[in-house]
Length: 343
Length: 192
Image (cartoon, rainbow over all chains, first blue to last red; front, side):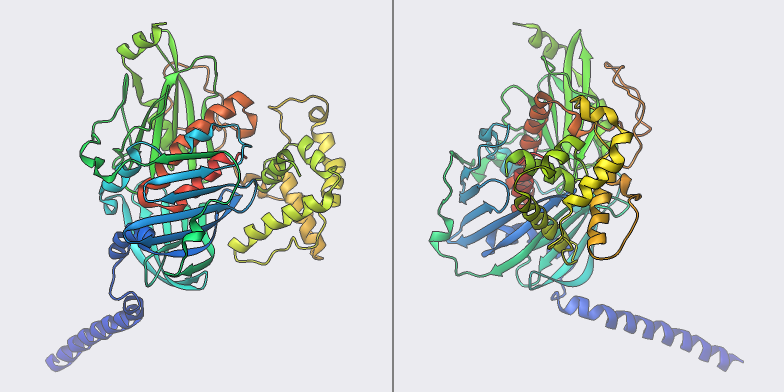
């Protein structure tokens, strides 16, 4: 009896062991290809890879069914990032970046001020310097291998831990960690935004001539502020005259964009970001509610404070219900109302 | 092809276009041009979904026009007469027609009616208008009121574009997203 029991026990042990071995065997390829790298390792590599890999190619970007394609050349040489992006459909236009200097040539077809297009001010760097623990708000998981634009890739899933953010899927090229494809998904799995290289060549052999501006049109150039600005970028949100009563956990104030008349603050959880704009309504009357463009939600509402109307707008990669909750938590300070009352 | 027509085409791909502009598109003198653009976009769209492009060499305009004439008019007779920006013809149904027309082109016949109507809308159904309570809207639960982008007038659209752009530029260099951020930015500046 006891022998039988003993045997039975050892069999169980054996089964467990062989099961473990089997699991390991199944997982092994997934690890060996990645050089034993975990999802977190890949994510850590993501930022540097985007800058320090040299490549050229064409990618498509779709939100909803709105599709754009762009040609890109990117070079990392002697510590300097050079990049040239050329629109492939619609009007002609291009963006050329050399280190911190950006030159933009875009067609004059839009109704918006092109001067606003180029990133300016310290906020651009603020995000990257802010090492927010993404792992707290998303569950990172290695999903396996795939092939994108002719390159072997690993797939990393970043699943949102709560309903206030979207989930992401990332396809990263194996040898460099370059992001070659990405999805932004809802909790139900609906893909809202899609980025993907359709052709790609990772190579150090990119000549200077590939970074020359060739389009004709109005050129706008800006210099991004230096990276030494982290100390100066205050963690205190620059909410002049208003404050937020609520925001989704994990979204920290990033920096204020240099909007002339608007009062804006950006928040980021390290992956997604949203901006809150509060300004006197003026003559424009906006409807109340949310619009969705791919993964971007725009929630608008009017807010009355001290007999003055304010326009509150939340724009960002967050679900409509969360955007509304943020917008509805905005409170106007009395001083702001008084300031507005002045002629 | 001018930007307006291109916008309509884009809106068609977005399942959002009003009847008038679709008619304008279909009566454009250079149909080959229109068709080529549509196929190009459709091709990219399909490529991304790893399918082949069914749009190659198929002229959808006749089928769409027929569908517009045959079915849309009785449903919304006012749209053709007034230029009411708020009253938009149910484009999702038309998109289904285009899809169906493409299928017909490949010999796979289906009816016009499709359940693709829900595409492009918010997950929750439109709630009764809440804009009356302008000061403190208490509703934190319940469905989110949807604002149709097509319903905005030029000033409103301009206003919103500015916000979209400002937000996009946060992402463009920041958030470590590189070209994704730029693409988002271009998408925001390109209009819809």
